[in-house]
Image 1 (cartoon, one colour):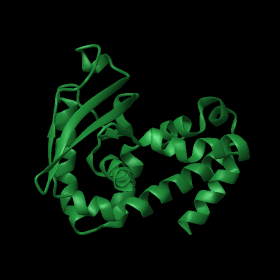
Image 2: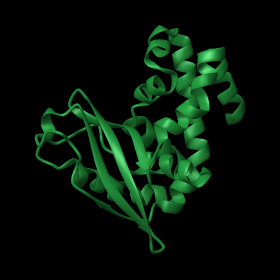
Image 3: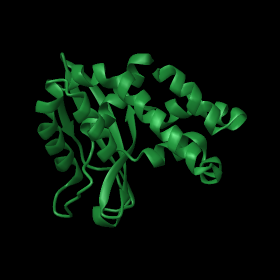
Image 4: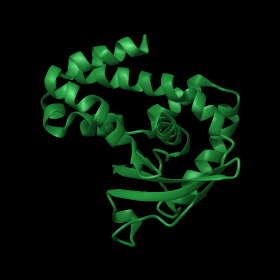
Length: 193
């Protein structure tokens, strides 16, 4: 279970979209291009590049909203939100960087995007499935992207049926609800330190 959670965040960090989305380019093709462009920096274990990649391609605000619940997130103080986002980013980078570097040379095949509408340009959310192959093992991975203006950002990855959002929510939602966002942020900060 722990390895699956690690793999989930690994895939979010290294395999997902760009803030620039070309209407002519299939999102799956675009994701594959990002992987190829990212490999040299990640193969040299460039932590700064990994952090910058997360900042650019993940919708942390969407992830935080799902973890805490929309009502709690919307009512939270700006400082509490900022602290939670800061510590969530650190946790993800610290915990999953070794796994990212291990899987960077995996082969990835993207499948046809799952969408109720064939016109991708009109979609607000989209799911793209893929198969990652490493050491003769296949792992099924689905990426859930959300369109922010004209750009795609990742907000969830599902590996072998296990969702990153559900995993994070199961770890922190009750704590946020019972103790508050600030308390939870400080607990994550303790883990990060």
